[in-house]
Length: 150
Image 1 (cartoon, one colour):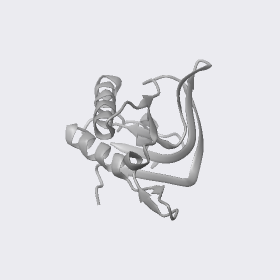
Image 2 (image 1 turned 90 degrees about the vertical axis):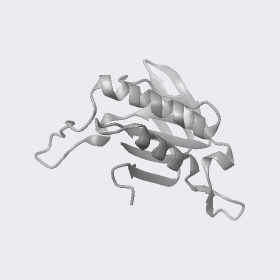
Image 3 (image 1 turned 135 degrees about the horizontal axis):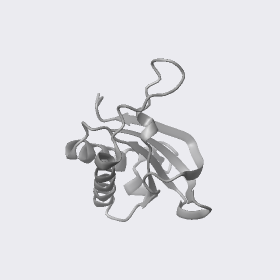
């Protein structure tokens, strides 16, 4: 499982000209799944993201987590995170899970994140053509791969 976490001042997701998610201070989490991902990966990654100390404290030092600043979150499924660009110029997505595996993982990820945060999160729509608008705060962008926990 791979995730791109962006600290945002604002973020929205639009599908078919309709805003389906809209937050202010918080995190945009782009997450991609592969067949080898399981509940252990989901639990580890959601805990890691919920507790990442990437928000400024009173001295503007990145010392606070999303939980501590009571920020919001949007989760967007993103199979292209598993793109392989090793050969040629057309990315291969062979490592990305097919829909029948990815949707249950995505739904479980959302559920576990809500448990970690103790509140609802907003989401995009799996498989939809989404327009994601964000104001990256910092900018702070972090990439995490559950297959590389070092």
